[in-house]
Length: 554
Image (tube, rainbow, N blue to C red):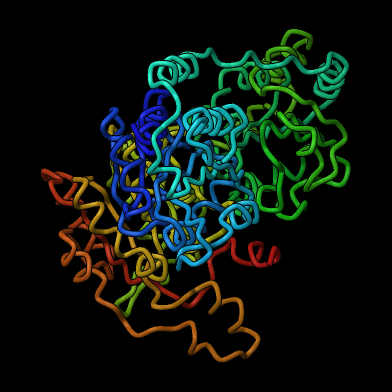
């Protein structure tokens, strides 16, 4: 058994179920070993797509993701997706061949590059310990929620493994079967302090982030006791869907009502949520007299973006239960905290963007993106999984395409990279084949990632790809245009994206007015044996509502 076989085999034995990648000479053997031991290999057309697919797969499945890439350019091609995953603390192991001979064209300091984007660099550099190194990379990725680069030097990969396979397999089984660590209790004084703040509050709001995605029941029980309204960051969108107190997303995507009610809160509690500049609109959603609390696994996260009056370090669900056990209900249920018949009525009537009136600006061969998105929302089945790319368009699908729960929205935006949306939708679809995958892209991102259209077809994914086509990098047009700058560098001639999609094996429709959505309706009622791309020629005179807030962060 050579080292490459040992590394791939032991990762599969430890529980790596799916590996995304592009195979070259430097990762051929380790990838085949993973497959031989039961892992599924999903071939991407570009390493950047593979890394993003793996990131989305991990987010939506709750499982470790594995990426396999060639040394040198294969690794650098994956960097944007790797940076997104590292910033998001996605549990991922990246297996990369490594050229250690300085004379090789592929030689480079892969450790330094990984470290620069926030990943943890490791190396299986000794044939006598390479399998154990792979297991340690697996452990760090899962238990510490880190993106790990495991370098596989070419000469070591080809060497005879110095470890017994039986011993490695037993070690992998122990890692696979290890019970989840029991969350450490928060300090009693911090729990008590949070309880006092909640009982003193008249208008509390809970903002749940990625760290709270599995704590809905605990947060709703506590919120009911203290009369808190419920909101989420963008990555946790849908967590409280169905609750009459659900404000949906806090931040740039917030409805006017959500922004008003959050801004008027006297206590904002971030649960597994960084309360960053996007979630708080650069702090503008935190009222001047409001107290701020953050509940997080890491002390360093408290107060990173907005000053916090209290930090509680602990698991979100566990802290919520601890606080629930010490607080007293703040009056009759119908009058607790921020909850009243008036607020409930406003949330019911004004709590979604599609309820906000607007003047349709479509015409002359272009459809208003709001009208487009609301029309799609009416057509699509409830069990959907929406993934969105970055760009001027992104607020429309992120707010007007509803989702049934937190498993219905995949948002890879920690690095704010354009071009990740299609790969995100593919990885999410692999994780959740029970839902209709919907990829929302701008024309810029769609053309950046067009190679992965073939991946959608090859995998047989019944995906709906919606391209908001304004024939420009719209964010730049609306950011620089008002200042009189020339825009030739960010505007483009029309492209027949429908024809490009058909060339990859898609069905496709071009939408310029609401009646054209009949093509989508027909596809939805059919066999869906081929994916569908919607080339939506959207109006382009105005920026989306969130853009002004977005550019304040640049």
